[in-house]
Image 1: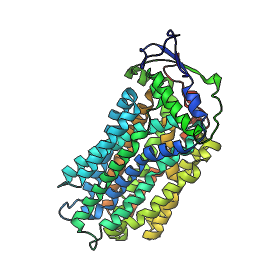
Image 2: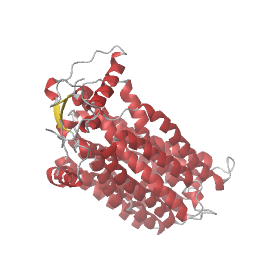
Image 3: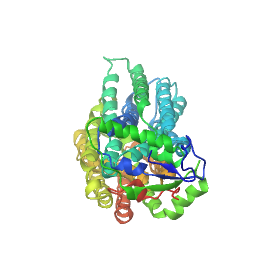
Image 4: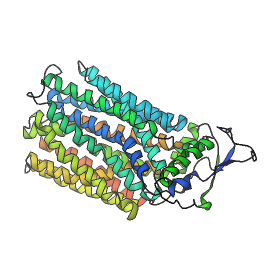
Length: 492
């Protein structure tokens, strides 16, 4: 083993050492020196699929608007905005509650609990009988997804080597749009009267989402607990076993691993939990600049994304007379551009750097949103042209939004990482995400292009402010170990 407990020389360390003991470990160095391999790919697939689920949920809710506005549900535009906001409020609640638990009892337990909540709640959505039951089940579905964000983001950050952490994180967050594409296909198929009775098509779509969640639950059984979390909480022997097992996957493939850097051994004081007072001090005193940056990035992208995407089906129907059953066709290219952005631009966050790329992606998104919004206002673009324009805008905006999650996940200490992700997600979504769909739903309902343009300009202004803040104050974390970016609170 390469972790040892001070004061227990000559004796085998217990499964969990007592709080207050000091552990010397090279767990972080061993993980960061690994080449990117099949193990990391499997982690990305099994855990990153959370964003595919979120994309599926958001797209289904948006694409099924036409069916939900018909009998027996008969939703109004306000009801549509209310349902979208219910999902986001649930996500905020779940992120905060499950984020606190993720730091306290571990990453692995939570990404099973949160996924189980998601699959039950999304299937129950298909059984809704009125706006109130629909909003309740959307709230619970959002709670599961919000909890997933915290557990999964922290786990992936702690398992992926530092030199590819930026690209990996952006691609994983961008995979939201694979789910969006899947949701579009489902909506296209299940809203066709010749395929299934429209009164049942939207219900079946949500049942399918629950079924996919069940399959993912089985895929996750082999994912280990984060070794970084284990060693901080006193499970030094278990952390060593996990890392040794990961290393064996590489050596069994004939890969010779370099020795870990001896200068990167860490001394950590074991703790059972982190008091909330210490969490507050870490976020608002010692790391207040990172907090300011995280808030700016998260609020801007949450408003931008949720306002535009949740209400795009309404725009297509209200201003372009696109039938509800055809909305999915317009969401597909939208989703394609949004996935290609993080995929193709992600590596630049590890090479060019975090700060210049955050400024560039947010800034370009702001300019393009204002331009496309003005073209919409003039009525120059038809539904195909409008969708093509959004495809370009979201190529950059998707990379920008993904970089917000990367920033808040890597710039805070391990002991509060999940709760920090939850807090920023909650605040960003609460301010930008919940208000955005309600505001845009109201603006679209007026039938006035002038008022919808105002909403677009608000989103552009928020993105422009975030570009300046990120460009000036974001942390240059590219290629650095998490422990170098933000020193653990437990450092001895």
